[in-house]
Every structure is written in structure tokens, then in C-alpha cells.
Image (tube, rainbow, N blue to C red; front, side, top):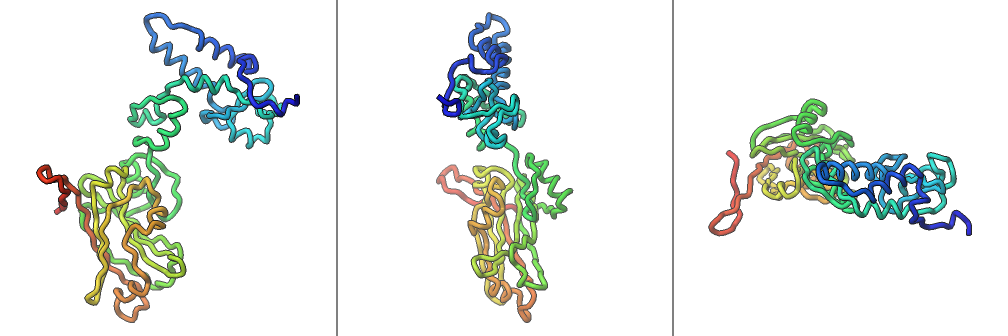
Length: 315
């Protein structure tokens, strides 16, 4: 049988000797009384190190591959190294390290965001799914003008927006903004403005931008909450634009910054103004955009007697 057709190896003897010895020690050793938790923690940490891919240093998940000499790596890196073991340069073939995959099933590890406050401990194969949705995971920078790579908690991002992106900061739950543009035809994928509001002890991002919706140029304003979706549901907001005895009003729930500004924009979850209507609101000869958008944010409160949500307006 050709070696490249081997699909799985479950014997510890096929693993690299150092890994096998360490793994066997942790599986067979029986901790004595006194310092039991410390021994278990050390054992889990060492086995966890065995599950670290030597190429990308991320945790390995099935299928875990190994070369004929027992060196392991993850499936993504197997493609990246062109089917050559990065340790011994031997051809990898299709050998699965089932022993290491079975060991992983027995592990329970803390969330990688434990240093940020997450107290949860998960089985190895459930940990990745939890971390993708962990409430303690850092937030992406909500700045819309570029794909900013900065991540962090909310206080850090507020400072980052103010100092690095020079975003306007306001306190209060009402706003009155005027947007002026000399050439309203320049709208394609043009992000215009982001303003941050501090209201009810929380932070909100007000976006205003122009883009093509199909063949039609439009302007759009929407609000995002700097926090998780379950917290965002506690708030509502309204936006209003108008002139010449006409007006458009939008009411909704702010979206969490867990959703990118592009995702919110593409879902049309906000006040959308067609260009002809925007120019009508601008008045004059309709050659220059002059839009005034007003709005407010309020907090929904539960009425303990009726169970009905009533608005708590910010003065």
C-alpha cells in the first residue's frame, strides 16, 4: 500500500517521540492529594501545547495531520506548506493523527478572553465556537472611512476614535446636524461622516454617507450602539430630515458595532434619502446638497405594572 493513501494513524508510536512520551505521561499519571488542581492545570497546559500548530501557532482542530515521522500541523497549514512537513521536509501524505484528536476531546480549557473577564471553561472542541460569540471578545473599530484593524474594549475605542480618527464627540441624546456638499453627484461609495454621542452612560455612532443603491444615488443616516446586540435592544432612536413643508422620519433600534457599518448599510437599516428628494430638501437651485438631520435617542423601560415598554427620554 502506498504511504500517500494512509488516512489515519491512531497509535502513539507513530507520533514524534517527545510528544508521545509527554502525552503518555499525562494520560497515565495519577495525581496524589495536595496540589491536585495545580497538576491537572499543568497537564492540560502541556497537552494544549501539543495541540498548537508549529506553523501558524493556532490550536489544531480535526483533521490534524502528521508526517511519517510524527510531526503534526493543522489542515490549513498543510496546504500552505505544499504538503511538505515544515520540521523534517518529508512529504506529508494524508495521515491523520487520531491519537491527538482523541486527547483533545478530553480537554477542558478556559476561554481565550479570560483575561478580559470571561469566566467560562469549555471542552476543547466547543471552545472555538464559544470564542467566536464570546461577549468579552474585543470590538472592531467602528470607523467607516477605512478598514481600521484596531480592536479593543469600548473605552479604548472611544479614545482611539477621538485621538486617531479625529471623530467629533458629543454629549446628550438629541442631535441636529447639517451636511453640505457642493457636488451632490459624487456619491459612489463615499463615506462622509461619523459622530459619537455619549448618552445614558453609553456611546453611539451616528453615520451619514452616500452610495449607489442599484443605479440610484442615495444618502443614508443610521445609528450604531457601542456594545453588544442584547444591550442595543434597550434603546431606540429617531431621525428626521425635511424642508419646504415636507419631512421624512425614521425610527428604529440602533445596531451593535458587532455588525460592520457596511453590513448595516447594505441591509438598508436606517433613514434613506433619494438624491432628488435630498436636493428638494436642500432648497435653492438644487445644485448643492444642504441637509439638516435631527434626531434623538431614548431608553426603553419596562412598566412593572403593565409589562409594556415605555420610553425614557433624555433631557
